[in-house]
Image 1 (cartoon, rainbow, N blue to C red):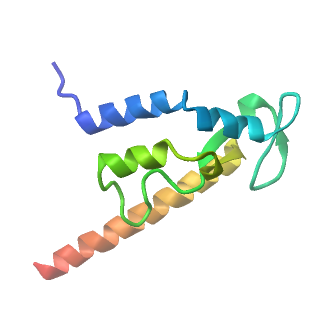
Image 2: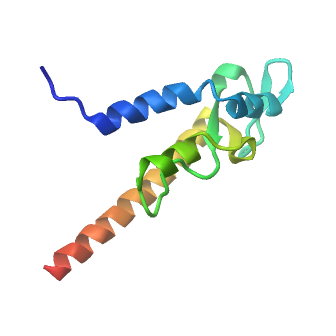
Image 3: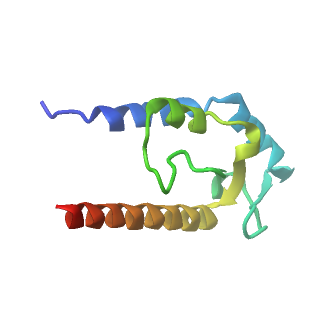
Length: 118
């Protein structure tokens, strides 16, 4: 039987539960500009419900610090309605890609500092 990575398992389950968070539902409602129409906060285009994604303005996992503890992860995941924004899928992909690049760069810098200290 394969060994399950507990952190990945819990992260996945918490993300799924967060879809029922009332603040999240309110943010989607607030982003609606017409019947079945939502405005992207970055490109300001109008998109249908299947073309948008809800984004955390302040990322759930800090780009510079990374994962710290479950309490901060949960607090950032289940945030206030004001920390959510509607983004079209291309804008959300770009934002997420940029955040992940920052995380990777910081991780590389930390690893190179550890290598220098040894």
